[in-house]
Amino acid sequence: MQFIVTPSPLQDARVTVPGDKSVSHRSLMLGSIAEGRTEVSGFLAGEDCLATLAAMRALGVEIEQPGPTQMTIDGVGIHGLREASGDLDLGNSGTAMRLMAGLLAGQDFPSTLTGDDSLTGRPMSRIIRPLTMMGAAIESDCDGTPPLQIAGGLALKGIHYDMPVASAQVKSSVLLAGLYASGTTSVTEPAVTRDHTERMLESMGVVVGRAKGSVSVGGGQKLRGCQVDVPADLSSAAFILLAVVLADKADVLITNVGVNPTRTGVIDILQAMGADIRLENPQMLGEEPVADIRVRSSQLKGGEVDPELVSLAIDEFPVLFVAAAAASGKTVFSGIGELRVKESDRIAAMADGMRRLGIEVDESQDGAVVHGGRFKGGTVESFGDHRIAMSLALAGTIADSDVIVEDVAAVDTSFPGFAASMAAIGVNIRVEGD
Ligand code: S3P
Image 1 (spheres, rainbow, N blue to C red):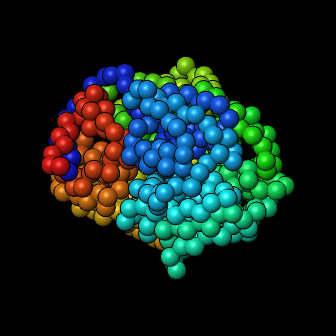
Image 2 (image 1 turned 90 degrees about the vertical axis):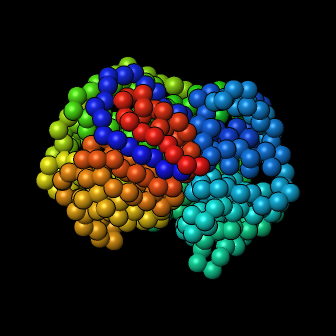
């Protein structure tokens, strides 16, 4: 399947985007081990979260889907999960694999976690190490990649873990295992990462200790089922945001978007580059802050992207590379080495695509310099990575001629309906092939 994007003017609009991927995963996992019912609205029915849904069902949890974006989870309590009859296939989802590993490490039964070609190449030592320190037994391939075989049946003990990489997935994995451990489990992070796990645990009645740079949970706490209203995903809204910024003249309102301060780096970085982006109507949706985001077309200028913002915008760098290509001067990204171990090597994938479209990019192991220029038309690869596919499609909105993005099926992992959402703001995008 491919996208064919023909440059065209955009139009003023009011749009929304699907629910937040991180919050949707967590609603299923935490709702499953809660006592009582958890009702979820605004759920992201993308392939990643559907993999988590299938895994929780395979572990014996009854979950109904009364509407396309609704889930009703009959929680089984902290010790109510049951051994799955086969491997748990988590598809393309790093979040599902790393959080599930934490959840399953303290069960009294074994589990095997596997995934697609991309996921089975991603590093899992980052969770195996702390979970092993807690007393879990987890086997992986010799290079620390999935499948993961989790022994189960072992008593876990609380640890203090000083995380070497800033990762919400690792932090969450350790905290979930901490619910099953004796004593207190705490994690210190080298930079602030998304805190959806902490917020949802709190809304389910768990006492979470929070100090600057660290978070802790005591083992043995019960979770109480609750209502979870999932905000629209800022990581998906980012594609609309940038399309509008880059257009000649458009004014778009994206409604009800999650603006948790651990996620809003993309807004700060684009604003620093000159983008006209404002938050309107801020309010709380349960434990998560949301707002409508108003964005208008603007001229962007390059510069140095503040490395302090990297963990707050970790999934938005492919979009920001496109912003940098359209900005005047050069844009310097540093401290982004984690991008090399996402669904693809995102520094290499974006450099490859943008070079094919006539943009100069210098790469280093943990950074890149993007030289502002003009996109020409051409054919580019997604490397099977949803965010690369969508980011390169954006380039097509302002290129000299059509941009064809190949192998875009993975877009459904995080943003089903991406082409229709882009069309709603006037992007001329066709989806071809199967
Ligand atoms: C996520 C955390 C991030 C992010 C991923 C979702 C999460 O990964 O890239 O898409 O839901 O916890 P890291 O925390 O490993 O950087």
